[in-house]
Structure formats: structure tokens, C-alpha cells
Length: 315
Image (cartoon, rainbow, N blue to C red; front, side, top):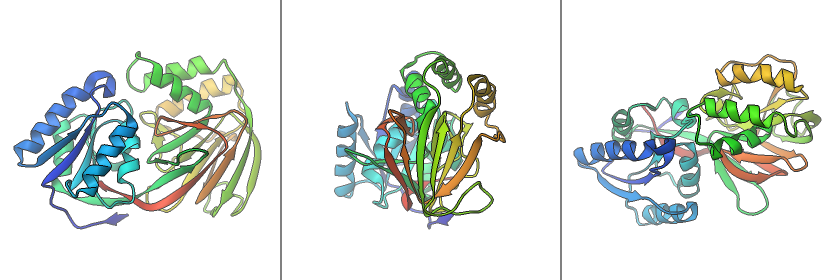
């Protein structure tokens, strides 16, 4: 873990999403920005109609030297959008959670149910450098902070994103039950570069895995989907990504696995295997991908760890 000296926070660029958390974002944003202004902090709000415009406005703010920090008031999806502007700039990213999952905030210990307490974390100015994942795919590269999911779990996430009921983590369970009757196991080719062997089921650097799998997840953090423990040993500052392969399970076995995943429990099923590498290429015919819960196209993709790519504000 890398800890920087505490920084003074006198001006912040705040990125808001009033629709985050099914409407919770508006209330949370009001409480957080009131706290910033109460403490004499200059607030520049970015509320744009598109991801591209959000990135442009945040970049402009950073290039003009305005903010001491960029603050996302929303969920992991809004953070994902903002990464394109703040990654590798050294400008700290703060977060006031208002989304459904809030997995990055939870991993960092940022309060997820108290907007004022989360705003106080920003005001305290304590920083930490963490790694990011970077997806190099046809088209635009994409950063992510938590987990890239492919296959079944990507389809579940995309379905869950389109749902308005139920709220919270249960939404992912309902989406999973809906998707489990569709296309299931697909053939994967997994190429590992810079792999390590440290008690995981890792065959070593430069390895190629050919396997049938329900899904493959690549984690910079341990959880996604509001606390689902998919990469239980992932660390945000080791310069590596963790890979979880859920092999050729039957639908019945997957149904038995889902409740434990949703409850944040470690999986010891023989078809659930973990690996660790600096760079991972995933190839599977027609498999969808998501990153931080946002659409990330279809495979093939190459994902690499970028050490200390993001400075975050932490308790």
C-alpha cells in the first residue's frame, strides 16, 4: 500500500449522477456539496448528458489546474466513466457513494450510507495510490477499477443494469436467474503473461489455458455487483490482476453457487479456479464483457494491470 502525505482540499470538481441508486444520487449530491461549501471548499459541478461530455469537462477542469480533487457522487459506473479523465494524472479521486453496488468505495473503506461522512473523507485529504486495469480492445481502450466480467456474469450485469426492480444486490440475483436458461458454457482461450505462482492454481508465466467455462472474471478488487466475492485474493496495489474461471458447471450447480457468491462467500468448488497475471488475453466466441458494471464490448480483449495509475482519497 502506498500512502501519500495529506493534501489540502480547497477546490473540487464534482461529477454527479442524479439517477444513481435509482434516484438516490440527487439527495446524496445535495448533502455532500452542502458539506463541501460549509467547509469553504469551492465546488465546480459536472453534470453532463453523456459519458464523452463528462470526460471532456473533467479533463478541461484538470488541465486548467482548478481542482485539488475530482469527486464522483454516484456508483462504480460513474467512477468508470471518470477514470478516462483522471487516470495517471495524479489528481486524487474522491467518492461519495450513491450507486447500487459501490464496490470500489467499500473496498477502500469509504462510508457507503452516509454522504456527509464520505464528504469528510474527501476533505481530510488522505491519499492512496492504487492500480487500475486497462482493456485494450478494438476501438477505444477502457480503464476499470474493480472487475471486468465476461460470459455469463457480463450478461447478468447488462440485464441487471436495465432492470428497475428489485433494488440492491438482489437485482443481480434476479438477473442471473433470468440468464441461466440461455446460452451457458462457451469455449475460452486464456493467455497469461507475467503470471505468478503463489498458492493459486497458476501454471506460470506465458501460459495458455483452453477450457470450457460459464464465465471468466478479471479483478483488480475482490468484489463486484454489490459485494459478490469473485476474486477473493485480489489486491489493488500489487501490480497484478486476479482471474477467476468458473468452469463447465451445470445449470443446477450454478444455481447452488449463486447464493454463496451473492453473500460474499469464498468458493471452493473444483470448477472455480483462480490465477494471477500482469496481462491477460481472453478469447471466446461472442462472449460479452463489462468493466465496473459498464458495457465493454465483446471478446477478444487484452487486459493489463497498470500499477499506481490512480490516486484515491481514503479514510
